[in-house]
Image (cartoon, rainbow, N blue to C red):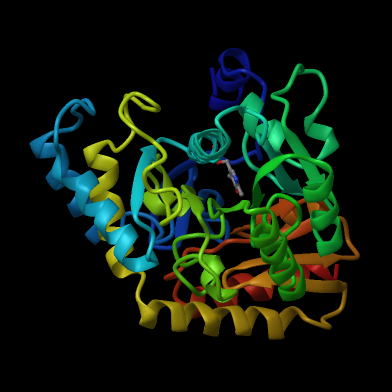
Length: 388
Ligand SMILES: *Cc1c(COP(=O)(O)O)cnc(C)c1O
């Protein structure tokens, strides 16, 4: 049985796959079953931020593998504590809960926001969370409920109640929802990833923060896709000049191994207490050791090169034939095209370049350390496919 038949026969049909088998990778290149190479401008959806077979990360992970691969959260273990310290020192946040994925990190954020309100009001009256239309927060029943897109709200109901959705371009809509509901938090992505790579504008963000102040709401930022250097800062809220009360991240944090994190600021650091939350694999020492090595390398030099590459892509594509618009931040870019995105993706694959889509756009999430020459080659081919 070939891989396609095997996959179709035994794997639940939740994914429509491209006709490529990824066998191995090296730097920003991946190779298929025929050893054809592809320039990877998707990084396994923003996960492999230092590409493939990265020596530093592999050393960090294998060193830990030789010591302890897993211990329960009933015991102390260095990698998780070290990673939490790094996260806090680099963000000003105070405490970290580790999960295994983005959705789980968001589940923790939602639980914590509601518990914060419970502790304040003594009951569940202020449990509503304002999220944004066109957002994406995960695939569990609760994070789907948090996701502000109708297409995710059918067939799997009943969904978790307590979410209302504000227009992401209209701060007065956030204010209205805060008046009309008893809320505990506003939750948002600074750049809506799955929603089509749509950055929030500054006026909207300051308006939302004002509403949060007025009604004493928490600000929860979902940095699962935008985080870990993707937008030119370690976390994208650092581009907007405020600090969230709760922040979640995943994807790039593990450099390709599953890990999620929920970070608590000053107002929320003591909300979660023993027994209030947990995860068997959360804070897994191997994933954390890898993540420590990743975070240590997301420094100002890397961020500078991210912005240089971002500028290069934006200048190459803005106004190019067949390009309607280019949006995003850093190395998280969405390109609206005349030619249907799906056709461009297939054309690029044919020519050895992997790109993603988000809604009707082409989405680029290359490894942060992609060599400039490879990036140029990839963008040249993408550009040619766009104007076909
Ligand atoms: C990918 C993503 C999630 C879900 O993360 P998983 O690891 O797939 O559970 C949540 N929020 C945002 C913004 C994402 O991009």
